[in-house]
Length: 126
Image (tube, rainbow, N blue to C red):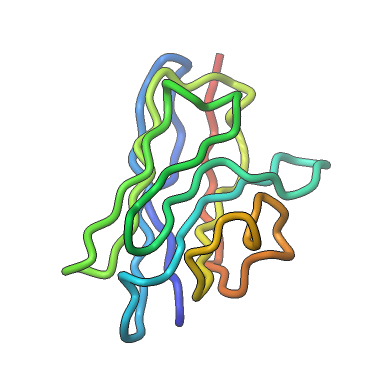
């Protein structure tokens, strides 16, 4: 599976952006997909995920109610709608995927994920 993230940019605080992640490969609908982010000088942290199959969603507390993950399996694309953006959301955002639907095994640590996109920069100005 190859992943290509896009949609980053510069936005003012309170604004919105939608990130996209285009995937190649068969049976992508069965993959669990997610978004991670890495702020300058910090480690890569989990933001949101959606399991394959049932489509259960998971969010880190700091983005709950503001970010929404979705997927269009017909287009092999995953989205991250980001609203009410804050300066602390500034980071490089990475999409990720794993060929499993077992959230307990996948988890929020980057080591649980197998495939990564190249990252797209989101900058939120105050």
